View 1 (cartoon, each protein chain N blue to C red):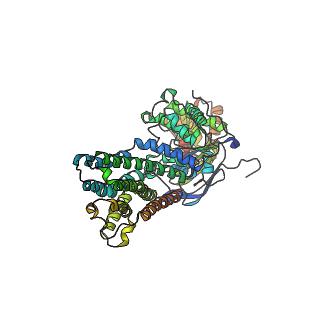
View 2: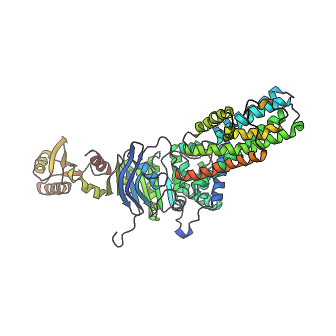
View 3: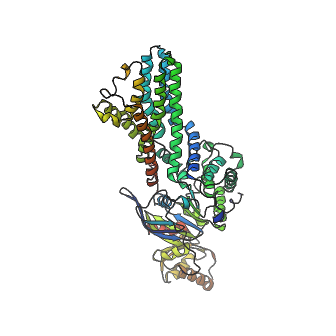
Amino acid sequence: MTAPPPPPILPADRPPAPAFAEAAGQVMARQIRSAVRGKRLLAAVLLAAVAPLLAALLRDPDPVTLEAIVGLLVLPFLVPLVAVSLGSGLLYDEAEEGTLTFLFSAPVPRSAVVLGKWSAALAAGWAVAFAALGATFLLTSVDTGAIRPFVKACWLAVLLGVPAYLGVFVLLGTIFRRGFFAGLIYAFGFELVLSFVPGAAKRLSLGFFLHSLVEPHAPDREPFEPFFLGLPPDPEGVCIGVLLGVALITMAAALLVAPHKEFQARNVQG
Amino acid sequence: MTAGEEAPVLEVRGLSRWYGPVIALNAVNFAVRPGITALVGPNGAGKSTLLQVLTGEIRPSQGRALVLGEDPWNNPALARRVGNCPQQDALYEDMDAPSFVAYLMRLRGFGAAAARSRAEAALAAAGLDPAAWGRRVAGYSKGMRQRVRIAQAVAHSPEVLFLDEPLTGLDPVGRREMRNLLRALAEGGTSILVSSHVLHEVEGTTDRILLLHRARLLAEGTVSEIRSLLDRHPHSIEVACDRPREMAAHLMAGAGVESVAVPEEGLLVARTRTPQETYAHIVRLAAEGGYAVTRLSSPDDNLEAVFRYLVHG
């Protein structure tokens, strides 16, 4: 014998829907708990661990080695990879699992759901990227105190690079069911091609602005030479503005797009 | 709408939905008034698509759907008043059942304490053993998971409740409990649209049905109203009696009887297009002819037969 159902609620007594920020916060907290056990975070951690592992294995006191690890591995590859792992499947992954229905059945705007998920992915992305960068600096044999401006620039690049890439990948993942592949094509197709295109077209790449933040502070520019050859780095203020702007605009675009999209699992049976 | 007639809770007009070349719903029209209504049809009939439109998950390609007079698409205000139990066996696997339901209640605006107490009340009503509440739902059986999904749909006492195949995975006792829960909710004022591809599952819960088949609404109304649609279809009547062959000869003389068979000794099966008249004829024969009729029944006297007739003719 089961218990009676919960007592009915009069329309006037029904609690109001949570405020936008409160709903986004609830979704964010849930998403972080879920991400901790998720495959995508594990993949991001494993990818990010390559940089400190390399630093620990090489144990090279030459700053050029550290520059090469950060400049050729962390910024152009690991930051986008971490971002694409965490950001590209926020909605469609959950739609495939079938649990997105519960969130979209709740009286909260879909944009609040996206913002909550975006925020959780950003927190996770920052945690992974900062941990990887910090561990790289800790495990290297390079005297990081002697190259403090470079170290500072690297922190700034990760601080701005993760939300910028994440914004792009969340937007792609909101528009396309296969957001992960769209993200990979963007990061390692479109951006990579741009880096070899002569002239100002390089400015269409986020990688160029990350590169511009770090290169001027590198004690030796040699490791950076293969990338963005021929276009001098943009000023720091411009880079900060562009990366912040991209993060905010792409996030806003994802919030605007999501309410007009249907997110369904592939195998929908009528 | 006549005076005293309740306003429709759900209204669907010219509703179509297609996925590329596949038509999932084709010009569906109906109105549902308060109470329990069953949405019945085989797998692939369009039931889940219809429920997804009504819960605002997807948009119609054409036509419109109204829930409590409002368009459900992208309508958080309406979502406060609606409960949804989807068909897909999905839960947040890392959570325990009360935390899962309470989380969704928090998203519905309930405070932490109210969310928790409503979650526990709903889980108890859905029949989930409290001994399992502390375990993660990943370790639950299919039936237990179904109870959790139902609990999250009813915990906020919705005015309208959509249940997509809610009895799937439940054992016979669980099914009975769930039917009782649906009745209790309906008595409390909740309007319920429950889908099923197994007709007898919903037959005891409501007599108001919507029959969906191949994206079209095949029939709508009470079982008896739908039965009236069957006049053009033969209806089987089984009579267990002594002297069945003699009775068969009398029955064949009656109007509307198409055929009579005696499949085994002591049993007669008549196929008729006028079942009420044939029933009356049999009763008259039994009284006047002195037949010992021990059983008079119709294998068609259930939703399954109605559905079979309407689908297959």
